[in-house]
Image 1 (cartoon, one colour):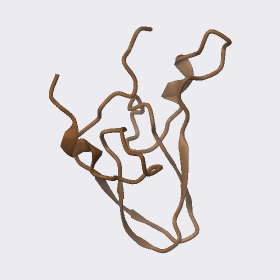
Image 2 (cartoon, rainbow, N blue to C red):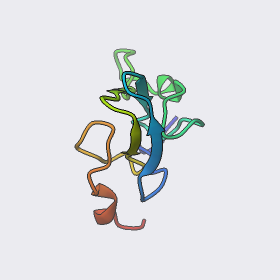
Image 3 (tube, rainbow, N blue to C red):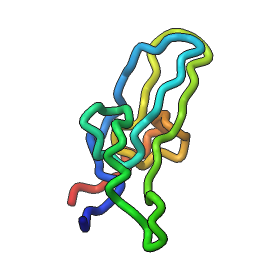
Image 4 (cartoon, rainbow, N blue to C red):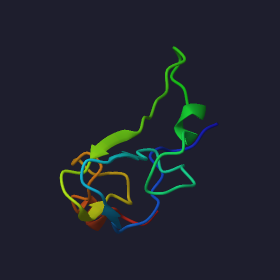
Length: 91
């Protein structure tokens, strides 16, 4: 497979209602069919040594409420939106 990763899913955050203490696995590759969460789709992409080139990013909710998970997959803030989608140019 020769796909450019991460794949931009959308240029806005996913607003998800989370529960305090619950762990969520954010999709960093953009290939999951369960956005913004990981479904293991990244495992199809390997480095030359056989290791995955992408991985899910864990997020543990410290409190219940709405969280803005990154949709463009270019955040520098773990799984959370940092506004990176505002600087992505259309291809």
